[in-house]
Image (cartoon, rainbow, N blue to C red):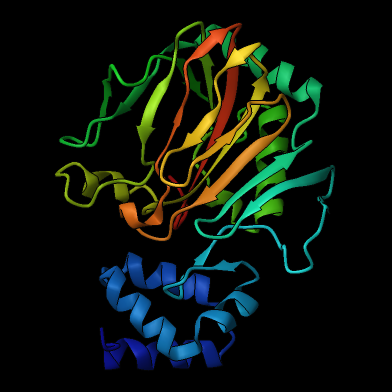
Length: 281
């Protein structure tokens, strides 16, 4: 697709004044420009590698920035302001990273305790209306914290923002899920399907989801792995660790299909953080 001349001119002028590709992308999408036009214009204006350098984030193959840690030197750990996070596994295509020691045991226990009074049967997004619905494919119990609802949640959210180099305001509220014996979540995508009638309503709150972090709060004795069927990957649900993955567009080609395997002994608790293109409101 050729870049729109007016959009390209505006991007070049703003880049020359020091605006970041990330902020310009969000502004263009928020103004109603089609994502494909934004991608084409941004790629022509600065190129994918320069976008990554100037925005300080990972870059999409289509030229739009995504959340992600700095792995340019193949580190075995990354120091945030309050914690040393271990880098266990890195897969580049699709982008999947397994972190160790992301949460302290005390933080895991505190999140479970704070979530307990609010746990109810988990819902999924109703693609027809943009609301919520019960879904037989998801048999966990869950709840949402508001952003910065308490000191533990706020500390974890800020750590993720720093680690993944993505604006704090672009994160949805932290969700805690409990998977008892037999509970699972069949493979699914986290992005919102553009073909569904309820998607435009959902996108008004911050645009598309672009990344997911699943943090493990309690290790079950058996089962409960996070699976990525398209790439044959299973991530063990080890307390304190996490799996992070991105998806640069709402399409199966991202190979971001994933699910939670049934728990066969014990209980699994996770905390999930979704990140949006723009500020989540």
